[in-house]
Amino acid sequence: MRNAPDALMLFAAGFGTRMGALTADRPKPMIPVAGKPLIDHALEQINGFSISTIVANLHYKPEHIASHLAGSGIQFSDESDEILETGGGLRAALPKLGDGPVFTMNTDAVWQGPNPLAMLAQNWDPKKMDALLLCVPLEHAVNHAGSGDFLIDTVGCARRGPGLVYSGLQIIKTEGLNAIPDRAFSLNVLWNQMLDKGRLHAIAYPGQWVDVGSPEGILAAEAVLGEGNV
Image (cartoon, rainbow, N blue to C red; front, side, top):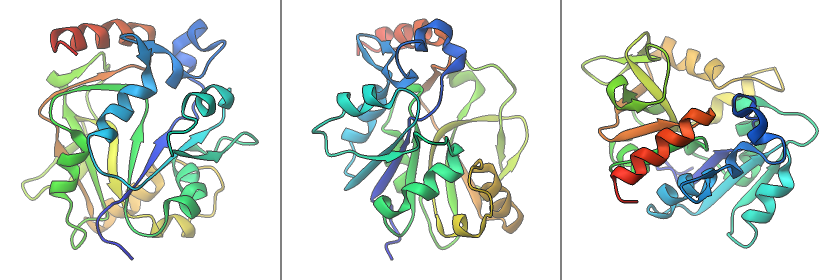
């Protein structure tokens, strides 16, 4: 079993209900932001970092994403019959992702700054971590409402509480998924087990991260990307 992540799960199966009419005829990852589909902004981060296997889960209007990514080498995990949430979706994709830790990445954010996958890989220590979350200080989390999700102690362990926002990107070991009885479940179930053992870690991202979960997020992302001449 490998100890360094060489596979990535793209979460692309959500309904995008906060986008309103924009998702009436397409899934959220296909909404244009700065002239290209939102999912392409995630792929830009991945393309700058060497990963052998990428899997995207599909549910709502899956043909749009499948057609867009045709020929890219990205594999698909079909959830057309039942959306499985993040935990169930990751478990269903494991035959394609393989053994060992994997990256998981949401497809509803835009990044401006250092490569976030490289930051995670550089800080990953499987001897003391079961998951490493990339979190964003509130002042760098554009278009995000709320007080944050996690705090980080002096040795890098995460605990729940107002502070930093989870970015939707992490490295996680997947062995614990098979012991969870539910078919559809959130990765929070697995995180809670890791928290109890002191093996959920987190680091802070120094660049800007834009939550593009709403129409307002599109404008915010385009403003940030414009400032960065992207």
